[in-house]
Image: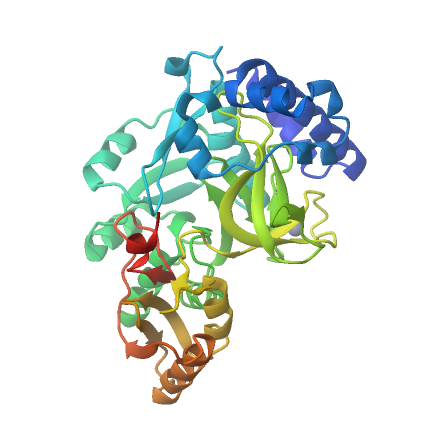
Length: 431
Ligand SMILES: [Zn+2]
């Protein structure tokens, strides 16, 4: 564990390092990773041989573009070829990556990388956003309460810096609130949709949670008026975090909430249109390269999220570049009767313009039907519903029946994540 001390010191410095130092560090890490995949990862050894390239050819960051873009399917189809053959997997840590279609796969992490990604990078970002040692943190997880109780009992190491208690997303909210009020956390961590329900409950019952200062949400969802609602009702600061099971935390909002700082000493982020780099500021596919994980290094991994880079430097003075994810990977394409696919982003940008709309979910129920569930604030009425209907009708070029339904609750998926655009017939169409 002592080896972590210089690492912690360095990590703290990196966040505000001059750009040229940071770039040198990143190139150095990339070159080490390239050597690792060439020597130890069969999939990449084959790629290098096929392309007739060697690690010494990687002289600049742009040379990374020599390597192919990989996707979830490549990993599923190639199984063990993505694993470091010299590493004992039994000594590695792992996470399950689920998928809306097909089988999940397991991501492996070497111990050092796991400590960094699972604890140090997160602590660095949380402390940058105001969390202080010794504070209490409530973490809301999509696991059954019994399992989390075991975690709550074995807490010695975790509680060295912070006092952490896990709560289940599936617990009854009344019972959860009693426990939360007894614990009095300054910080809470979980899906945005959950805190939205919590805020509505607090508003309805005229309660307050005065101890709570900050909420950290996982970027499942990103509806700005939902964030605003949580902020106003719970009187907290809300920081969103962008990450994935395969990479853990990738980027996070600082106190200025102008995009997300990328953990650039852990991960490289490219924004691509097809296979070519998107222009600065242009929306494209997010493609990530892991600079730290030696056990199962994902290089140029298309994560199925969209986003864009922000060019200007942040007012906070941190030098890590910023990006803006535009719609969570949980969202799905909508398919018109003639087979044309429409990106979820098209719908979300149009719907979110409507004032008084607190939360919504757009669901393709059949080949020809779209249902939009909406939760509106008290002062908003049928006119908004009519306008939403008209907007979606236009986007689908009049080829779908649009139904708008006012509701009081929109449930997340079984895994606790929220799909803002959901296609219930997608599986039938998928290969
Ligand atoms: Zn900043």
